[in-house]
Image: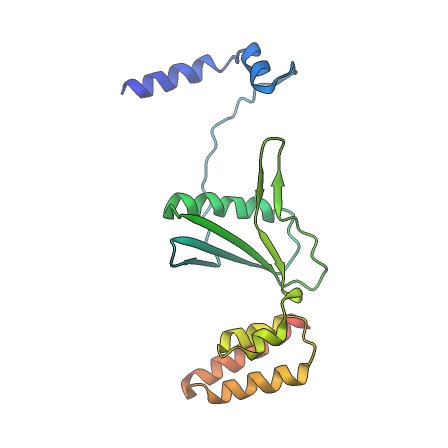
Length: 186
């Protein structure tokens, strides 16, 4: 209860901020304006595309983005906070994979004077298609269709061959995924 009283007292005191303290913090004299509405609520529900815990307790977070969204760095920062708050990882690796047709123009960071937040931004067109297509994993093979395909015939034959080898009950879904990925590239 005592901590609450102290917090309230300090909040009340800072409703009229100490000008000299602000100068000391910033290292210079500056004009400022008190913002009245400082009640910052989080009411959004965020669902990450993929969150994986690695063997060393590092979390890998991947978001898939199909358009150039100028707010993406801020969304990724929201995920950064939410993921680290929930899982308390040893480390967090964040990756945004861009699948858009337009050239990639999004920023991979938020830059302020005292700090920088950054995440990895990968244009799928820059990922080596042949490496994914050669993978024994059918998901890798399907994802290769989102890369820059140097040899379309090799890609299509390789994926169709793998779909034919798949469990009969999975073939329809895999073929549908293959077709949908083809539409994304058009």
